[in-house]
Image 1: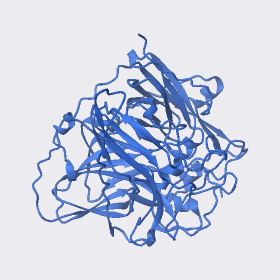
Image 2: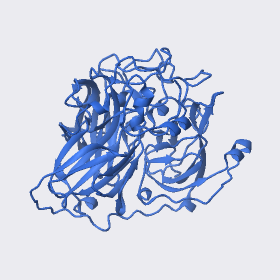
Image 3: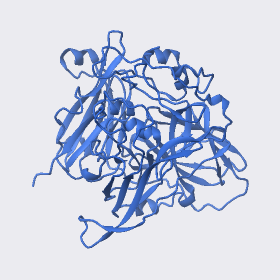
Image 4: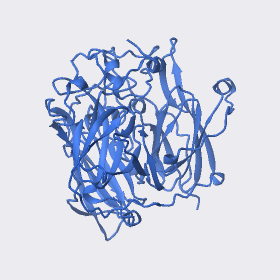
Length: 552
């Protein structure tokens, strides 16, 4: 069976309704944006999704809110080490092992085999302070064989490459190129990489994950992800909820077989198993399905991170509670925003304050669309809360677009087969191995305009830099296809207030030109930009770019 994204829009039903386990498309409707189909290289038609050969868990069969929400442990330095960038100084040293392990995703599901940093999912939370550098030794202690389906047709995952390869990227970190987790810098079990993180950036909720060429989607699905929090004195002075009341909340979705093992969807061609999307029907919050969390009647800060392969989350609270969003991808907004709904595409973050002080004795659900995925159980006893929610947070000065040294225009491309199914997704019409075309100068300001020629929204992420969303504007697709003319058909649409802060991942809508501005303040070297739909990223929707040294 093959379903186009447009057909899906016509036929998608309610969330977590009745599922036919033999039909993966219906199973995947629980947590999915409009899908796309994309082929392997050399295909002449889009791949068809195979029905799972094992029975999958039906979400409606699981009891809700019977497992406590795990709070990831905070990583502790195991010592200090010297680094050539800091003569005469020793830096905190962390050793983080990637290991296979088994875990209970839900009380009523057999233990699931996963991979995780320090043998957990999510991995331990790494905490850093602005301008205080640290070292992390990322150790590959995984097995030699992968337990998820590798497609050897994908560039970088050929049969002559080892099955198990890793390289860790801290998403949103301003780091030297040799510590960014470049996709081709992977290494095999028994090896490690010592990375240096200067932490020269504002307080923000970042996250780390695998970035190995051609198998990122599989390694993250296996569990290789964790939170990385940068703190600074300016944020600390605001007296926001802190300590035990500052909780990372990593959201994703998975398909799980009835024997407890992860199921990753494949095509009906055993020699080319890659599919263009991986949506699950089971929501995970910090590695648990439908957990609960006991809270006090006071303010809490939750750092919500979408670590799903492909799915977006449309979040709300029951009982007409509202979020106070205080931060986005790259740190604090200028002021809190009261929001009834928060939508996060893959890799996007939202820091929120939830005030439970008037909900003593109640149960409040965090919902995706209409379905509860996490239950907050508010204790009855009153407590003293010394935290505050200030009216002002941090100034976010706007980038002067007129000062940009370059205004680049890049396309998000889709090539369809004869039946109108999307076969290929590319950035600016180029594949990974083609020569680098974006070479900004260090400390220069540029604008990049993403001309989305496809029928779908894509979350676009740039490594190294933080950026600001300038606007989105509709354009004439036919004029572009005819003579590559960018003809606008309506006024520019300014970003929503929650997008007015610093970002590192932006939703590029179909039929729109999405424009961002950034200053390339990091070190010279090779970095990447890509779609953060992991199935797209792995199969050519990723490009390198190079920061050149500033002119002397």
